[in-house]
Length: 162
Picture 1 (cartoon, rainbow, N blue to C red):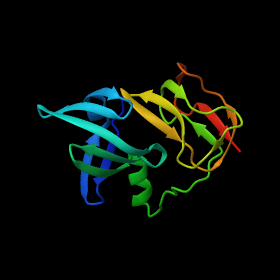
Picture 2 (cartoon, rainbow, N blue to C red; picture 1 turned 30 degrees about the vertical axis):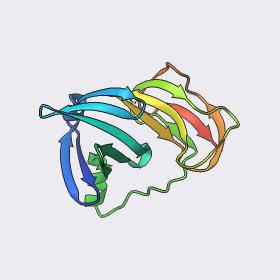
Picture 3 (cartoon, rainbow, N blue to C red; picture 1 turned 90 degrees about the horizontal axis):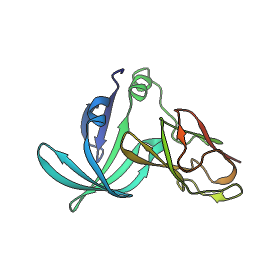
Picture 4 (tube, helix red, strand yellow; picture 1 turned 45 degrees about the vertical axis):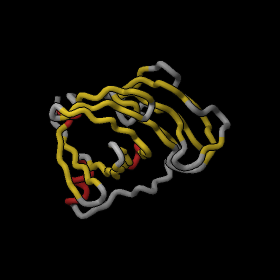
């Protein structure tokens, strides 16, 4: 397994670095669709995902009475920034592909449905986590190629928008 590193910026201030292996070994149990029970350094935490934008790797989480805004950068993000470029977060994509291998837990749209930017399209379970895949733009669903229970590979075409 290749080593991938990630950086997380919490509340726009505090930086954390971690490896893919640490994510895979995270002791987290899904309690309900947005809440996890997490063990870290022998302490128990209830973590609720308040908001998530999987495509832009932004999450707002609540731990106890505190809310944190978390932006995540991958190796590729870091490389692009080190070269002096920026990633566009406003891409208007017409195709939705699986960002990683996983299992489709729920498809929330059908052909012909109108969708809003940020609206939930489907739920993908990957690496012991449920990931909400959202629409990158306002549009209409042209095709749904994913079905509940289906196993998908990375970059598998899931939904087409018009």
